[in-house]
Each structure stands twice: as structure tokens, then as C-alpha cells.
Image (cartoon, rainbow over the protein chains, first blue to last red):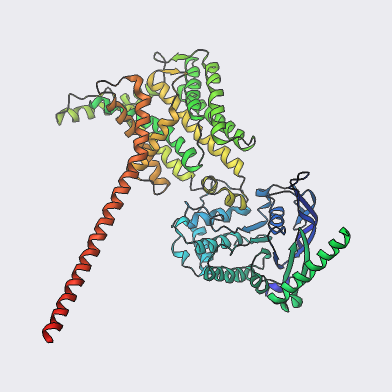
Length: 274
Length: 343
């Protein structure tokens, strides 16, 4: 139902993002080459591309881990191009590839939830896990169907990789950030766990109607999830598919498309060289 | 001997505050903060100089606490904003504080014996309550009258103080701010992704840690009756020793348990040192060597014990498996024999 809201204002706007690493050395690499991207409210965009295509750099530029050399990043209409990572994080939820990265292992599940809950507020001297919050956390954790709601006082370090990643996903989303960034968040899990987390991702994004950008290496996953798909190569967005167009795609078609564009590009490069 | 242990426990409660500070930086923030050697003396120096110049000793001790907080914040700033390695920023601050402490005191030693201090004040207050006489009479009644400490004031009040600080400490690390500080030491990337300013949290954490250390320094100066520029040397190792001994002996499942363990560890450390110093050929100058040995053994012994336990467990399992095998073998033998007789 929330999907009906899709198509409202642009929650994420990238304009002419340019980032080069090791400029002026033999290792110079243009990681992002004038990238433009708009995510409207409720958009769920999957990003595919080979290694070094610039997917991770794109994520880092949006999250504020690195600043672009040129270009503008806007979240919910606010220009955040030079805003520090932690300040921007009040608007952006993130799940990392490493299942260990999104949670604090020596703290309990409810304490981790409390930290996630604090995203929107100034952290003060109020009790982190009050009675009221505990029942809210419990209720929220039930959405994972993993039984974590009964293990509120268990240390997160004791959970399996799949459970930790599911918890990370929940923690990144239940405060309903403006944008959700998923950075290959199922890549480090075994197939069945990856399937579970993918399923949860679908449910949660729909439940909260989150505007999502997901990087993945798994083409099938990129096709199964979301309403838009973009393909990156050499720091550029080389292919985009939306709604019906995306639904008509298959892995084979995608690969063919990739080959076609790459082939063309290569021949055009050759033409310049000759 | 009982007197030695009594004073060890007395001092142990005061040093426990310092050990809690070290626990905060080392364990909670995962920041090996060497500022401690300097900030301990800063606390002592500020309190001593203020007391000598006639300031109320409680106020002077409060000022010492603030000075320690400041010193810790500067270490935090050096690390977070100056991007200096944690170890190095602590060492830099420690060295800088040595000179600052000399400046504060104006000389290398400030005696406090003739002054009115927190310790004399609480002793007087305690005496006015008249509890000592009761305890003394009680001790005499059970026949241990040969061991009579001058007063129970210091040990009782310091125990109370250590416990109050422990409870405040436990509570603070359950608040939103405290949780965020703990998470910063646990997984910085994660806390940042939940919109917490980890730089600020580290600075506050180090400030609080050194505030506790300076508080302890101020009380130790008043307890010993002097403040000395060299009294902080090796303090970080003493703090670490207390933390490690406490964790090894009492366990540290969660913060509440860990803080009580650290206090216990600080007292145990004092007792071990005072017992070691009673050994004939050891001298006062050997203190630091003894400390180093205590820390090394506290670090190594639990591991050796674990290994031995593991070995024993494996042996047992092996024996059990063997037994089962034997039984199965026998059974099979019998059934074979049965088959044979059938034939």
C-alpha cells in the first residue's frame, strides 16, 4: 500500500558526482565519472556492476565516508555534500557487507537496539533501555521471526552471522531513515541465510516504505528486488531499467545488455585510438 | 600482619577509583590511555596546593577531579582531532603533565601532614559518631584486641565512596550517552552509522576516566600526607593490574560485575604488594618489579589454567569414548560367540 506513495519528491539526488583516487600518479583511477542519480520516495534501486565499477565509492559518497571532488549530494532536499558522516547518518540507514560491522558484539541485543533507536535524538542521561523501550524493541524484533525477541539480554557476539545481519538490517530500518543503503549485505552469508536476509529486506522495505539503494553482486537478487535497476561500469551508470522494463529483464538479457554496451564502448574507444 | 592488610584495604578502596578510570579507558573505550601517570599527580597536586592555600579540602578535591577531566579531554582531542595514535597521544599528555604538575606545585613535593584534609575531616566526623569505640569493644570481646587499628573511619567512608562511584558508573553506562560510549569502544563504524559523534564520545570518555584517576590521586595525596611529582610513575600499570586481577578472580560478565571486580582487584593488588614487601630480600624499590610480575602472572596464569582444563576435558572424553568402544567390542564378541555356539 505504501508503494502507492512512490513517485513523490526526490529523497536522494546526486548531481555530477566526480571522484578520482591517487590523482596525478600512475595509479590514478576515476572512481565516479559525473554520476547522476535520483531516488524518489519509495524507490528501491538495485545497483550491479563488476569489481571496480564504482558501486562502493558511490555508497561511500552518499553515506559521507568520503567526499566527492565535484558534484552535489542532496538528501531530502538538503545539500549534504560536505556534511560529516555521523551527522548525515540521522537521515541514512546503512547495512554493511560484513555481518560483524553493523552491531556491537560485547553489548546485548536490547542495548544494540537502544543505540539504533538513538539515531534521531540527542543522546543524554535517560536510561538506554527503559521498560517502555524494551517492549517496543521486543515487538520490533518479532518481525524477524528469529526468536531474538526472547533473547534481549544475550550478547550480540553470540549470534550467528545470519542472525547478526538480520539484526543489523532491523536496526538500520526501524527508525525509518529517509534513505536505506544496503552494501552487498547478503554477500558474506551462506545461500540459505542470504535468502532469509533477502526476504527480510523485502518485507521490511515494504513495511516502512523505505527509499532504498542496494548494491549487489548477485544479478538474480538485483532482478528480484526493487522497482529500478542500474548497472555501473568504470565509474558511470551505463544502463537503467524501470518498473515494467525491469520486470521484463532476466539474467541472460542483463548479461547480453552488459556485453552489448561494453562492446560498443570498447569499439568506440578503439575508434578514437585509431 | 593484620595491620598491613588493614591499611592495604584502606588504600585499596582509594586506588579502586583510579582502577575504575583505567577500566573505562582500557576496557570500555578500548583506548590504552597512558595519561593516567600524569593525571593522577595532577589530581594530587591541585588538591595539595589548594589545601595548603587554605581552600576547603572537599572543594580542593572537586577541583582536582575537574583538572583530571580536562587533562583527559586534551588527550582525547589530540587523538580525535589531531589524528595522533592513541598510545602516543597518551604519552605526550603524560610528559606534558609532568611539567604542568611541577608548575602547579611550584616544587617537587608538597607536604600535607599539618593540614586539614578530607581524611582528617572524615576521621573527626567518624569519631564524633563514636562507632569506633563500639567496634573496638566488640573486637576485644572476641579476643582480637591485639589488632586495633587507629580508626575505622577511612576504610568505612572510602568503601562507601567506592561503592557509590561504582553505582553511578554502572548507571551511567546504561544511559543513552553511556551506551554510545561503550559501543564506540566496541564497534566504531556501527556507532557512527547511527549518527553518534564518536570523536565527542571518546573525548568525554577519556575525560571521565582521567577525572576518576585525578580524584583518586587527590585522595591518595591527602591519605599519605603529601603530593609528589613522582607519585604517578607506573600508575597505569597498577591500574591495569587491578583490572586484570579483578577480572581473573571475580569475572567480568557485564558492567555491574566488572566494576565490583575492578574494586576487588585494586584491593587484592594492594594486599599482594604489601605481603610481597614482607619477604626478607625484597625492598621498597622493588615495588615496580613486583607490580610487573603480578601483571604478567595475572595475564598468563588464567590461560595456562584454561589449557589444562581443556586437556583434562579431552582426556575424560577420550576415556569415555574408549569405554564405549570396549563395551561395544565385548558385546559384539559375545554375540559372535553366540553365533558360533549356534553353529
